[in-house]
Length: 156
Figure (spheres, rainbow, N blue to C red):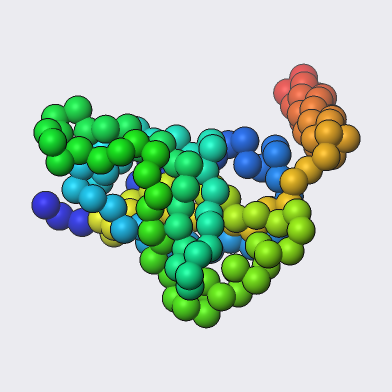
């Protein structure tokens, strides 16, 4: 099997940008079993309930749903198991210190294959309040209306 150039996105967490203010992002490798990789290559995963936990100098991806591989046998994996993230020690130390602050968490944004290897993009996030979400939606809607108005004027 040849390596695929570029980034092949498997799953994205579209609610993350609506629910959180994102501060910093980081790419991390994933330690997966064979059936998990096959299920991901089939294009099935959900990052909606996922988060990153730091324990004993290691980082783990939790709450991410990778369904069982259809053709797997007794070697199949648990769909919501704890998966180890492959990061450098100093990155783990820095991010663990930042997530220890009140109101800060680490969440997955994208799950993808890069050069044939499974990667996850994680971000430091602070939760938005309801008025922040409404304001962001209002700004987006205003921008869309302005673009529509500009488009209608340029084509007439």
